[in-house]
Image (cartoon, rainbow, N blue to C red):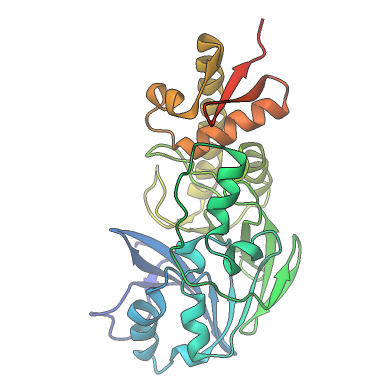
Length: 314
């Protein structure tokens, strides 16, 4: 990284990049299926984490890094989760083997952390025929406290405020440092292009969350992954505003494209819609269609065990 993101002093030749955002405030890039997932790290009164990666992250990634600066997983006192998906909360149960850590998340995502297959059961219930398998990609973790919109939480001696930003999940959070206005957004904001956005909860709430975040004037945002168009995990200055604005435009453009295809075809299953919009994840398309039903623009019916959306246009 250039500019503000400097490596923490120490020998990191065989460990992960750790970028200094402010004194005692860092971003860590953990490996994830040829990609990366970001973890926020606060070093003050113990170690605090914003997200904890996949199930292998604590031992294979965080532990070696912490030991280079004479710390350990046993020094982790707080894990504040941006949401309850495996690549952000999967390491929680492993960390709890080493430390009496306090784990926190929004109440709406607490069930996802404590019951890994639940997300797939909920999706099958909402969108029959879309998910046929039940997968658990991490070991269930226990959440010790829930946080809500506007709550300020002391994380290892640093005040962090939670902004409820649903869309990707029902309980997604964007967590920002009170002193510097540096935000850790998880998957709340996802840019444009390359199969984005990926939504599991609500298209409408995703757009509303983006618009709300765009009013906060964050100094920096640490994204959950290096989302396009900038393809890096840490944004600052004008990049923040540009990223949020382009995220909103991409989402609204997608809704327009879905509506055009639905009106032209009259009725559609998600797999049929995917032929017209191959870059759009099926679950995201389903979330858009679900919102069209809520707006009275479409209706949903069942056919051969699969959900079919029908336009209301005359």
